[in-house]
Length: 143
Image 1 (cartoon, one colour):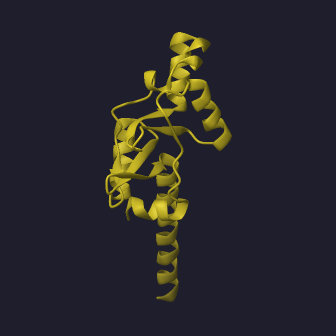
Image 2 (cartoon, rainbow, N blue to C red):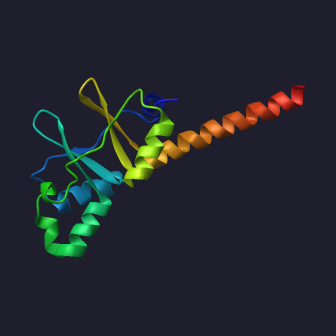
């Protein structure tokens, strides 16, 4: 099972922002859309960074409420870990757990193709386990 299966189910929509936007603007987008992270892109839609709720909370915790007027680029994670459409879901889960992050941009043919969250990965794994469980019960019942 691959990342492509998750994106096929959830869609390829990605919420982005630009590096010059303020943390307050980014926080408003996160709240409005009910999401936990936004991808920071440049003029050619290249991935420059990622900004999560955690990044915003840390910025406010360290610098006070004034940080909300600072640009996203000051607090975003610029060394973004990404994945590919054909990456195995188990590998993605390990990568996210080891890196301690909850959102992973998906790159396909050099372009941003979607984002998977740890919630997406866990949901997919639980659905797969449930399907295996049902198949096993049907197999045993038919024997």
